[in-house]
Amino acid sequence: MSIHIRQERPSDYPQVFHLIEAAFRQEKYSDKKEQFLVERLRSTDGFIPDLSLLAEMDRQVVGYVLLTEVKIATARDEVTALALAPVAVLPAFQGKGIGAALIEKAHTVARDLGYQSVILLGHERYYPRFGYRPLYEFGISLPFEAPPENCMALELVPDALKNKAGKVIYPAAFFE
Ligand SMILES: CC(C)(COP(=O)(O)OP(=O)(O)OC[C@H]1O[C@@H](n2cnc3c(N)ncnc32)[C@H](O)[C@@H]1OP(=O)(O)O)[C@@H](O)C(=O)NCCC(=O)NCCS
Image (cartoon, rainbow, N blue to C red; front, side):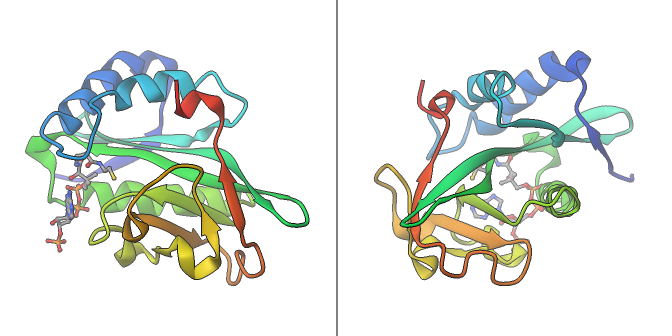
């Protein structure tokens, strides 16, 4: 069975809602509200439709990833970056490379659109395979408490985060 990745359309919203709900149901470090986060993020200025992607297998929606805009406030200026949140695959389809395919595709589209870096809070054993490194290596911090090993960033272009030490600013929608 092949995986088809495409941009999400408004008609997909109900299916994506249920997919995210099901994917996080068994997840220990989850507030089980990621589906509502996505609903809120879709109505922010930082929502980029090209970076709201879903994976289909046999026309069934089995995975979803969203990258939205955030800022990094440095000592000199504000730099635009992306936040990866969430990525989700239906439990029955996990471990088949769908999450990886979604993440890699999202990176490619983001790079093509001119974005330079991606920030996330996630599993320390999953994301390094895509090139993510701990945020502290870049001197960047999040505006809330989180285990340092789970706070990561990816440079979509070499040295994008060099000399960009600072604090990530998320849209208010992340915290409602
Ligand atoms: C995380 C998730 C998106 C990965 O998607 P997937 O399609 O199952 O992942 P892939 O098939 O590309 O990769 C599988 C690998 O991910 C690892 N993995 C999956 N979930 C993991 C987790 N919670 N912690 C660490 N590694 C994890 C598997 O162990 C496997 O590792 P291996 O390749 O070394 O055997 C999916 O498991 C999921 O939806 N989980 C629930 C929601 C969630 O936790 N989202 C991420 C929030 S940070």
